[in-house]
Image (cartoon, rainbow, N blue to C red; front, side):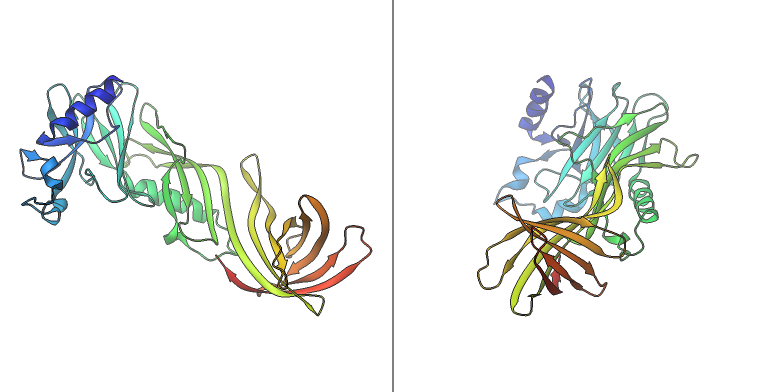
Length: 331
């Protein structure tokens, strides 16, 4: 509560060299992360957002700076070079991961899909410094992901976004000479993509040691595909399947899980599908049901060229029908 009141009181003044960024105060209430404008010792921050402001946003946004500030002396301690968050930035926010003793902090300037800059700052004493760890964070994690990448899939290293843990309040763990951060890697806006999570341990002195990545949830790929074709020569159907790996104890197995539905073109009544691969040659078994009651199954195989074919089998196994489907879209 004290931290919240302190932050609000600083924001309320809205003038001076800097304005605090929310939820960035250190555990001992000594430091916080703030923003200001390069070369300006006094700024009316509220005035920057008024409709009749004389200085337009495009004239100052390019000169935004972020700082570590001392809340007791109200002075700037460190310039967080590379970070330029400010009030009202589109898709923007700042995370400050503080050590328990408030002497070290990881500051992340967040963007829409992933951080735009990450710095590690050490405060107090002769060792006071700031290190930009963005390249280490992104580069090491992406390299590890690509090393585990299923080579049957298209190489999409450049499309992999890496953000902090999806938990509401991600935390960092500080060791004597390193910091460990949680991460979540994924491919935004790509249905046929990958996702995984883990931690990265980054040494304070990057020149003398390498960062290490630990994957806690293996690479999970996912894909949603729509097929059209025929069940028997005369029954036209449309089927949509979502594919993702079977996961046990956080590790993806070699099995692929399927979920989705299909319907007959003549009535568009969805029938639920759930299944799993039978072998690594593309064969699968899809169980169908209506309101939880089994109504049959598809025993089929992907041909590797967008085709899915096999036979439909009734619940009692007495009736079978051939089916032949072709992929029409995926996302």
